[in-house]
Image 1 (cartoon, helix red, strand yellow):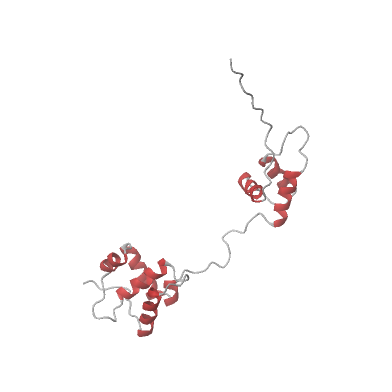
Image 2: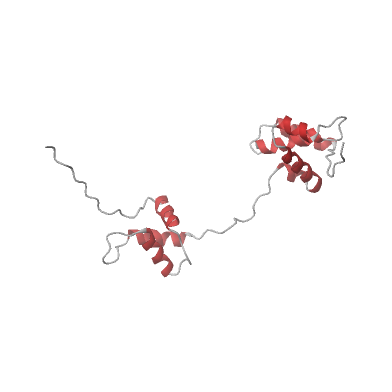
Length: 167
């Protein structure tokens, strides 16, 4: 058998924790967390006969590469980090639409239309918000979401329904 670069040797305390973790019904312990715990228990070299990564993958019903990743993560990172995902500290991109921008979008949609226009379009609302200097740019989809969230859809064009007379 080929020597492994990363090995899993659980202490008695870690093993007990993982076994309890797998059996628990807490909502904090997601199915993914439980699978990671099962993988570590199967790969534990402190036992007489640990399973191979191939056997572990089959037993835990995951891909063999994931077994290798979990084993590497256990060897290189913290025990808790293997079980739980890292919490994001800040969102990837701060939202453009703040309460102030939202208020201006709604106020614009509810205001009188520009001269020569029947109704506000999403593009017209976006252009006005950009010209006012509230944001650098804003998409029609974002404006639509704000208006939909507040049930303030821009008025639709008048649609005249005609019916044909029966002959």
